[in-house]
Length: 338
Ligand SMILES: Nc1ncnc2c1ncn2[C@@H]1O[C@H](COP(=O)(O)OP(=O)(O)O)[C@@H](O)[C@H]1O
Ligand SMILES: [Mg+2]
Image (cartoon, rainbow, N blue to C red; front, top):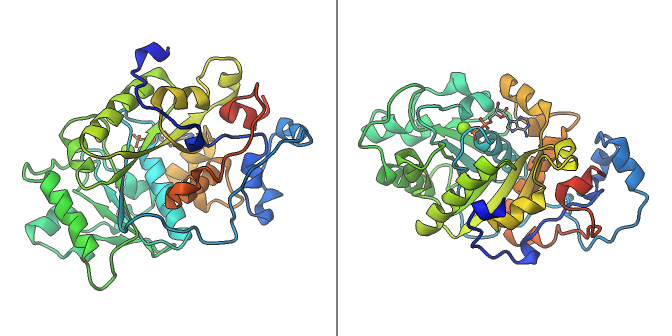
């Protein structure tokens, strides 16, 4: 299967985030450890000793690495793999960690980030109107009432066609305007929810970004598109590319019907910041417009998104979350004790 992809990127083992049976629970604040519904197989395996080098510290604010605003495009190539879900949940997690975030929905024809964030009724103006001079930028930014440090900017009205004049220059202008805004100050993060495909919408969405989070599912079609997109990002000068593997199903991995996270890492050769399980709570939260990371008690996928947000902030903490794993067990598979 690996031969279908050009695995031409070298991954240093230090960039791997390896999951061990109790890695998720160790990364949780102690108050959450009791409430996390771990499968009984995991609880059984907990008794087995394993060595951990370091774990995340949840009792502190993560240290923001890199120049701000960090402009991150969330992309994938293939549609339906979870880009918008990731943008909503990482955006809200970053806001909860105390960072200011502007999430831009650059998926023009099929805009739905506003729905996932539950902000659809509050979008009066879009970036197109800002560029036409019909409104100011701050009027087009929709502030989340739950976490006011998160703001949403939609590029255009739903089902509307993007004016031909809206391209890379226009989105770069928008991001520059955010960078130099006076009243609210520049945001710490600009997250851009990229459309599927590699045509004009993709080229526009990646134009202002200096880093990327590639979302993929562990299937060969998504991986091939992800590999192609990685090459295009690199050609565009975006070298800082991290990966989230979404919709992991341990039952399928166990039956060898789904690739493991380690297989995906080996194929794409990108540093991993998150592994998100398939979770019915994601669909429920999508329909409610209530991002998963706000769920109480926390959902497993929500916790995984929070960890990914943490690793995104502290770029170099990726080695700090590495845990030893048993030689025969690989990737997320071992987390669920398969
Ligand atoms: N981890 C997950 N578990 C279950 N469903 C998911 C998960 N991630 C995404 N989904 C669902 O997949 C669908 C597509 O997700 P979306 O974020 O809109 O993808 P994209 O933006 O890449 O097109 C949505 O219905 C969403 O609820
Ligand atoms: Mg989307």
